[in-house]
Image 1 (cartoon, protein in one colour):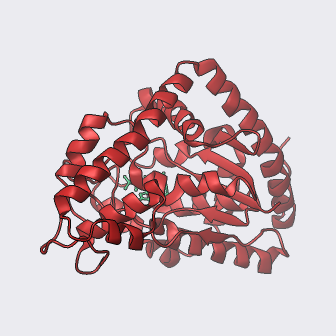
Image 2: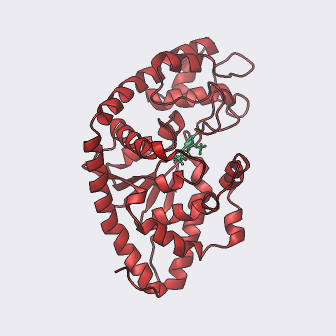
Image 3: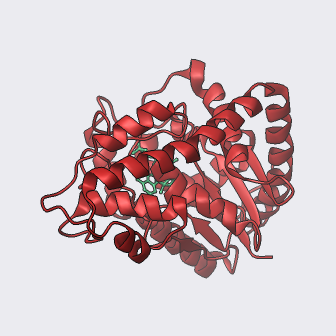
Length: 330
Ligand code: AQP
């Protein structure tokens, strides 16, 4: 089976709708056809200011949420990045293969560093650690949202460069980005992506939000001038974003939704979508809570995931160490 790798950061107490529709939904569907490695990048999470007291807890929450959303441990593994030291070891080698100018072109760094009081070197080299995450597992496909496309390009460039210099050591991975849900927009400002760290007041829907709060946020979503419910991302970014969310969660095409809402207004769309999203989130939140109530079991899930991950990661790293001219770890 081809292999998939992806990660989601433990930087909040819940995933948001963008994380789910852009990435995790695909993690679940790819399980049928791929061998899947899913991990919680806690090492990436410390590239910005964070609270060490909640980091582990958030890793448990992320694990519980992945299980609640349908990551199936018969097909997939879940592990914390920090439990597999090969990530940092390969990242060092890739750091030495990356041009400073090349790394400086990453737009996410420019975005995020402009919002930090203090910018760490770790935030700058973040995409290189991400390349190590992917290449260690010889992943064929990486399901992510559109915001990760540039980082995936860097990963591919590094894999090709390493393969040319050291003979074939890495599989060159392909991004797996679904067009329609590639970027879910902030409900209060459809010009920007829905984001944990940079959202408008009611613009972010977390999967663990209370149903009443979800309905309220959707009711207050910014819509556009005009009154017809049509999918037109350029001229109607607000309504189009709502339609994309609706279409993905209710499994109805955009055309079908346009037909359903012909002659109705934005208010009707928001009211119905509020129900759809709340109905989707409520059982997931409940199931997440159940998984969280047994932390020992979550720890076992992460331990066994990390063990399997290390088998693969250490095999790749041993080959790379040898080709690079390093001594093997004792
Ligand atoms: N708005 C989005 N639409 C579609 N996909 C998205 N992703 C994030 N936001 C959207 C995808 O979610 C996955 C996990 O992302 P991450 O762990 O890197 O989280 P993140 O980038 O920290 O999430 P945010 O909310 O974007 O946080 P900020 O902006 O605070 O850093 C990735 O596959 C990502 O593409």
